[in-house]
Length: 418
Image (cartoon, rainbow, N blue to C red; front, side, top):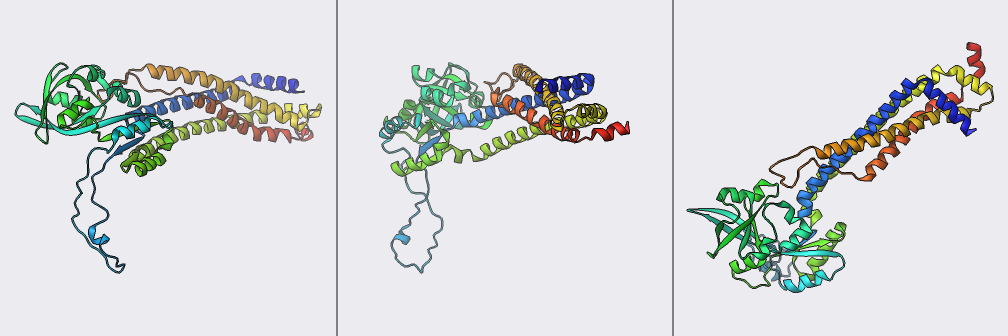
């Protein structure tokens, strides 16, 4: 009986092929735009996430400068009826480096929750450009660790990040700094610390993050170079950046490290809370628009099936008069709706994928993002699965009510009316 119902559904669809085609085109268009919209918007989100998230440690260990919470006046009295009003508190002289940094890093490397670590030592400096001094920050890093964990080498616009390891006193200048100093790779720049220590550095590459204000002050050297410039020991490290196997562990892990090693620990969720909120909202809008397109297509199918049932009342009456039950009639029109959803959805997936490939080849060149050459696209298979699933669900719901109406038609009333 199923075969017979399918043949009848096919005959009804081909008899009104224009209406059937319009309904299928509506589904195809909706699925195509759903795939293209989600793929492009989430590709854009991934690119923006990469600008911040990929360069941010999951957990950052450092020593923060802050006033002492427990003041002597509070410690020296046991009275609970007194209120202490202390104004103009000043920060205490805390050490800027992390105590026992080599031992901490060794312990972190043995932790199975940790993918890798990257130590860092920063120094406030002045770039000496003739008679003009330009304020900046010199970051001492391990180039290999930074590239492996935080994609540092991807933001090198000229030169190679590995030159920091092979060339003595090498420096990678932020593009904004290089433009101010009017230097090229191979030139030498002189920097001075707040203590008056001076050092000549050889420019080996340019760094361009896409954040203009950041690139105007930042430069990168090996961590040993900063230690030499500051006149400190090789164990002197101001930051330890930790990358975890699971980013969701960061808040709890930060609290654990802070308690164990008595240092400040900042997790990535806290550091980028506003950014993650914006990314979530953009994704939510993309899904909302895409699902709205599918719902609109469902209403189109609903209207077309309603018209088809109205025009085929005599056919329905004949079917029921010749022994077809209400369930058979309902299944016939459900087959029509699901066929439109399946065919239109599959064609929409193909066209949507082709459209994504076209978007992926469109040039996207901007000075702010040197590593991006084309528009970002995400080909996540989940989008295609969601698209075809919603296509079938929408068309099934659109066909249910008209098919239910057809199943309760009284053939005697229709034939008598004819």
